[in-house]
Length: 338
Image 1: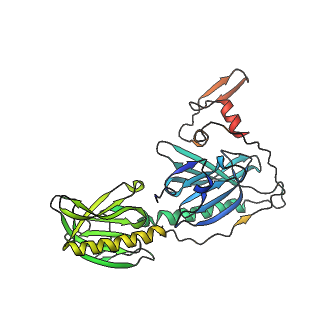
Image 2: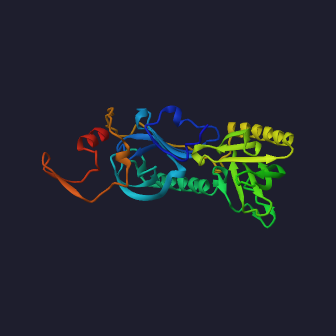
Image 3: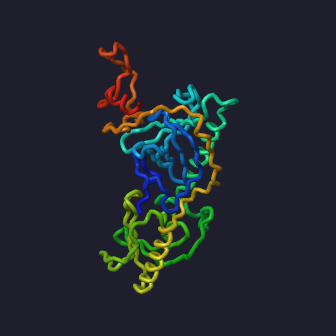
């Protein structure tokens, strides 16, 4: 199962894509939350997992969002205009796609004119996502293939938090170079590591969750133990040889069994306690939004890289507007937002 949840921004996702994948856990749920930039005035539910931020609205699947934590560039508080709360401090989240950046604004919605209205829930949302994002960014070895990195302190292998070693296997030839390179395997609860005997900085660390193939295969060096990583982690192909061949086949079988077990229940390394779900009564809100199907691409609403200060005069309306991005018309915006 390809790991896309933490590294992609997806729009209009189906309910199946909202569900937790193996190893994913929703750590915080805020309800109701307004997607102020894309769907101003509409209540939804914001969920934050160990891999992504998801915003869903029960009224229609066509507006659901999934924002991978790896794609998040910046998180900050800013004042913004909400149809449901007026001028309010909201969560501004910037994320990057393959060729552009997106800006999302999320506002914790409170009842209309409540007594003692405060920004406590807004602050809690901001603090929660910052904590989970920090835990995600400081646990990359659980999810990323790493080459030539510091794995040892003096002569001792540095374990990650909650990582355990299954076994260490010397006499492993890495076949990436023409002449081969002799080293050792370390199988752990998180990853397979290979390092060279003569230079421990010549190494590779590959998490189980990023493996796609673990098998015995022919090579120009003869029969080899082959590991391939997924497309989301660079599509690496690594070949190894262990003598005698019977021993190599036995180790490859052990690795395949561990791979199967860890794919079924992967460890992504984000260890944060669940936040108690925050809900407010739905009976005291104003929401007057009509949803219409449109072929308009929502990426143009959330895009932040194409913003401009240039203006243009709209003769039909007799108004001066900030110039819209290419391909976006006033009709598109009206249809999408109203």
